[in-house]
Every structure is written in C-alpha cells, then in structure tokens.
Image 1 (tube, helix red, strand yellow):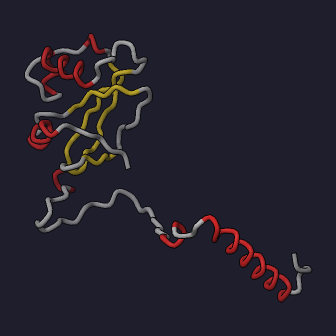
Image 2 (cartoon, rainbow, N blue to C red):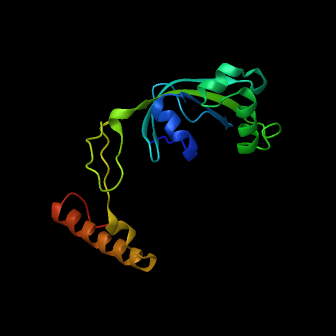
Image 3 (cartoon, rainbow, N blue to C red):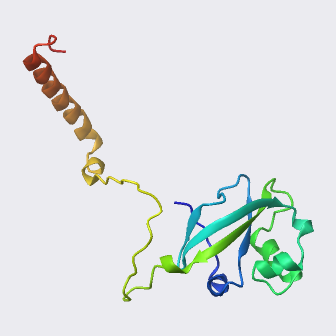
Length: 161
C-alpha cells in the first residue's frame, strides 16, 4: 500500500481543499496516477496526476495549490525539507491528489465507518512459522522427510527416498 507522509501543519489544508498538490524529491517515481495512497492521521488520497517538474519553473499558482501563501514560502519550505536538492541527483515530482473524505479512519473512541476496499487481496498470517528456531528447523526437516518417505512407500509408486 503506497503511503505519503505530510507534516501536521498540512493536514487541515488537505481536508479543506486548500492543498491539492505536493512536491516530492525522488530518484524514481513511487506513485502513479490512479493510485490510492494512505496518509497517517488523514485517510486516503486519490492520485490524479504525477508529473516531473523543474524547481525553477514553479510559480505562485503552484505555491497556492501546494498550500503556501507565496512562491517564496514554498521554496523556503522545500529548501528546509530537501537541503541538498541542488546536488542529490534526484528529480522533482508534482503529485495532484484529492482527499477521499468518505474513507476516513476516525480517531480512537469514535465509531468507525466502513472503509472502502481497494482490491481483493488475501493475506495469510502464519505466526507459527516465525516461532521456529534455527535448531528446530533441522528437526522439522528430518520429520518431514520421514513422513514423505512413508507416504511414497504407502502409495507404491516408487521406492522410499
């Protein structure tokens, strides 16, 4: 499940629709149009568009969409978050998103709403596998070998291994 992390100061701007884009500095794009990503303390975002941009080409409109009052404020924030962005070899990505208010996970103690399922994925949790210690693995392998030998011998198809 893809995730995006935002500073707490941006969460209200996302909820109210003042922030509809975010800038990220990545070597390779991690999110694609059509993805749904989870944001801690907020819920789900639907990703609309992802584009590679040039930092110097940003304008006031970009700053407003990103929840900042001015371009200077946006650039100061990016310099603080990504201090070595001029020489790190990564690219700037602008991610357009929309907050899915229907799929919000409420705070503790409040009644939980049913969350929309994204896809049907079967998850199998087998804690007993994690409990096997290395010394016990060889005993288990020997036991399994004996059981397999018995099963093959009982079938009459081939001699025991």
